[in-house]
Amino acid sequence: MSIRKRFYISLVLLTFVVLAGSAGFHLIEGWTWFDAFYMTLTTMTTVGYGEIHPLSHNGRVFNSFLIVLAVFSVGFTIALLSQALLQFEFRKAFGRRRMERELARLSGHYIICGAGRVGRTVARELRTRGETVVFIEKSPDRAEWAIGEKIPVVVGSASSDDSLKHAHIDTAKGLVAAVGTDAENLYIVLTARGFRSDLKIIARASEEEAISKLLRAGASQVLSPYYFVGNRIAQLLLRPNVLDFIDAAFGTERLDVEIGEVRIETNSPLVGKTLGDAAIRQRADVIILGVKPESGPLLFNPAPETAIRIGDTLIVVGGDTQLKKLEALAAV
Image: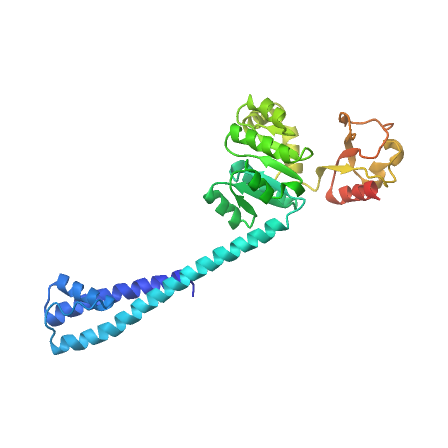
């Protein structure tokens, strides 16, 4: 039986004892309802005030049974509340220890600053893709949501050095600054960039003029939800079929296709070949959208004569199986 059910039972039992005792003294002794109620309370709490009126023999017999029932019901309630308190404290203690163990093992994860609507959406999408995330959130209520979702969370300010260290920024893959205000996000970006110059930092901007400031502060990219929504509405009006395809391919009801990026490693057999000679389409069944050199601009729709070099990143479209084939070719 759960603690809640036992608590309801104890509440019903205490109420029954009070009502039964009050009714018994009122009917047996003829006392007023208030005197009967008061006598019942003094009996249940064993305060020892004595009888407010002399009791008859029948009244003493009734009171004897009432004492036994009252001691049992009060004792049951106290035991229940003690058990509930102990379980709550143990749960909190073990929960904190489990969270600390999870935080200590973090590596190759993503840090999300702010567990609001944007942060939660990012976390759900990353976890769907099998990635590990950790929240930094100063609101206890939002932190409780993350704990309920079994997501590690550091309770504190995301712009604090201690919070970022606790979230293991030194081993993180990337950081998302998605708290409520642009000023906070700006400070988070500055602090995070101070820890690592190579960290991928994505920031949210509410106001358009904040985008350039966040970029200057060190954000790798800045996105504005309002700009994105406005742009999407315009695209729905102008190019509805294109967006329908994108939603079907990459949305919540996605097809078995995705845009991925694959880095060419040193020992890959593709190194030194052109895209045409590598026959990537035939060997991995993917479509190459672009090539991003280790240094230099992205080449969109590259020509077959484009050479593949160490450190290049291929932007491709394909299914999960096809992308794994290409990853094998790029890493062997």
